Length: 241
Image (tube, rainbow, N blue to C red):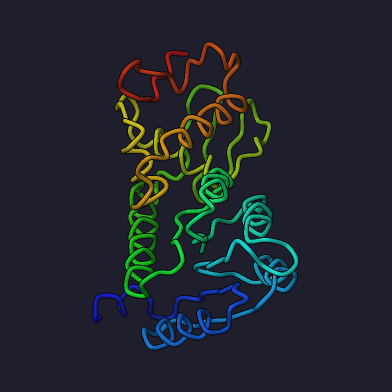
């Protein structure tokens, strides 16, 4: 568990879960690994705390008294700052899992779950966040693509000097393309790199995010010239001006 402790040390984690036995078990393990854990049992308090403080991870049960975990996820993704989100779902709620990923959740774990599996998923999320933070040199935090400007430090995108309202996931997706212009990414690769491990079978989530991103940054979303489709393969950033 030493490797886990390196990833969890001093991480601030908010758990929004109405089942005290599950929340207590998670809090015990994460605290033992050096994390600072806060637990609230309902969506009202979860909604308030998720935006009132800075967190390294949100663990949200989907079914909660008051606002659901999906509502909390949606609200958090409206904010400029990025925080990883892990959803706790029931085995029968596939539609909720798909909606959660579309709203910007990073991963999900299905109840009943192994605590070791959940910790492994959390480690994978933190590894991905760490890798993305290191992927671009600090001296090159602004990327320009024609009139499109991506400011990594400010987590902001402008088009013709006008701020574009992107979700955190849309920003991560655009930045991923911009860091490797010309490279073709399969949908499965984008899921693994941008959404993180464990999303096999959710390629349609990539499609919906690409379509929404195009609607915001392309002059003609039906004939894109920034993020283009490579038929039968995937997508690439191929701006030609």
